[in-house]
Length: 336
Image (cartoon, rainbow, N blue to C red; front, side, top):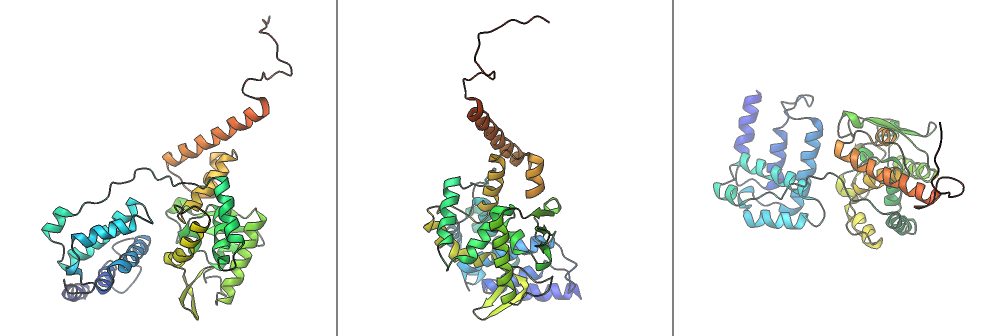
């Protein structure tokens, strides 16, 4: 039965198939049969593919997969470079290549012309400076139009949670009485990112209270419903599905321009939150407990920031040239 289904899909997926339909058929082929527990790839990978396809569809629209040529691929790389890094662009175009190969639309000529962008080795995002962070919050606090973004930013800066982790929060993951939120495996990047995060700052608690009110107004009532539900259209919300990545795109572009930080990505909020902790001299084990697993490179980066902060505190307390003794004295010899 599964072989017959695969043959049927292969027959449908041709060079003349419009890209959105081709992408849907290809994504369906990543699932083994009708039981969604059986897949060729992990559920998180399927979600990633879905996000890549969403971005690709915005550019290629209803183009036939066979009509996508090298010039169009290059235009996509250039357009996406304005809003995201090279690694993500390569992942998106890589997904497009897989779809085109499945449809028989990827030619030897394309294979020879296409070049992926240079891989970005550093996984360390740019963090807001304290002044830039204040500018962002001030821009958000003064606008009713951006109030949802304001609540979102406060929650991200106060928890170190990533965009995917926040979007996948369910009502049952929020324990206001305990002042805690819980990151599930479903929304976390890997098993090391499953964690509990205390809600300490009053403005973070205030923000999550507003988000809870918004969720209930949108129909989220059970523990399994999402804190940030999916908006199907102007009048209909789907509490059983999480908000998509693109839901923040338009207001985010407006906000970062207004705040004078046009380079800021949503994911940079996580790095900013961790950086503030490191600047405060927070021990790395505490940072890792809050933020979840970080790589060796990231650990070294935050340790360096923390060491710099300690040095600044000591210099402020004692001065660069001041002796540790109450009164500076000439060098003395001691007998033991």
